[in-house]
Amino acid sequence: MKNLDNDFRIIKTLNNNVLFVTQNNKEKILFERGIGFGKKAGDIVPFDTPVDKIFSIENERNLSNFKKIVSNVDSNIVGMCEEIISMISEELSEDLNEKIHISLTDHISYTIKRLMANDIIQNPFLIETETLYKREFEIARKAVKMLEKKINIKIPEGEIGFITLHIHSSRNEGKLSNTMKYAFLSNAIVNLVEKELNIKICKHSLDYARFITHIRFAIERIINDAPIKNELLDAIKNKYPASYEISNKACKLIETELHKKVAEDETAYLTIHIERIKMVP
Image (tube, rainbow, N blue to C red; front, side, top):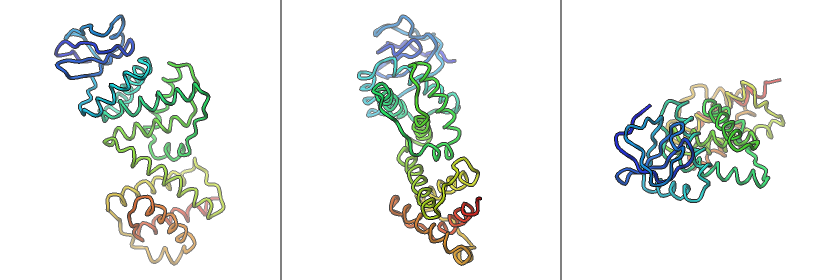
C-alpha cells in the first residue's frame, strides 16, 4: 500500500478500481479497490489517498499508443486489463515492461471482439508455450479466469498461451519477437521430427519437455553467438547417423529462420534428444 505524494487529476475513470490520472503533465495509472467509485474526469485524487499500485508509462510513443487505446476501447475492458496487469505484477513480485499496458490490452480487446463474433481462436503453439514458460502459463490461466468472470464468456484454452507470451515478453524488455521465434521453431522442429520418424510425440511426456527446453536454450545460444563444445561430436555422428541427419534438417530450419549458422556441436546435442524420442515405446 502506498500514499500519493501529491494530488492527481483524473483523466478518465476506467472502472471502480482503476484510474487514468495526471500530475504535472505526467500520466499514471492508479489501482486500488474502490478508488474509482463515483469519480469522473476532472476530479482530484488527494495526495493522502492509499493506492495498491501506481503504473507509469514513460516512453512517449508508448504513452501515445496507450491514450489511443483509452480513447477507442471500452473503459471497462481497459480497466479489467489493468487489473490483470496488476495481478501479474503481484504474482511475479516484479515490475513489468510498460509495453504490456498497450500490447496486452490491445490483444485482449481484440480477442473479446472475435469471441463476440463467434470466431474460432486456435493456438498451434499451446503445448510448446506451456512447456517453455510454466510460471507465466499458470499466471495466464489465472488471467483468463478473471476475464471469464468479468465478461461472462467462455475463453478457449489457446488464449492462455497467447497471454503467456505477453507475460513472458513483459519480463524480457518487451522482446515478444524472440519469444515467438522459440514457439514457432519449437513447433516446426517437433513437426519435422514426427514426420521423419513417422511417430506422434506425446506432448505431456518428460522427454518432450526436455526436447523443447533444449531447443529453447539452443536458440538462445545461437542468437547470442554463444556456442557450446560437444566433445562427443564424432562419436554421436557415427553411432546415430539417422538421428543426426534429422537433427541436421532441424538445424537448417533454425538457420533459415534466424539467419545464423548452427555449429555441428549443437546439431550433435539435438541428435541425442531425437534418439531418446525414438526409443520411447
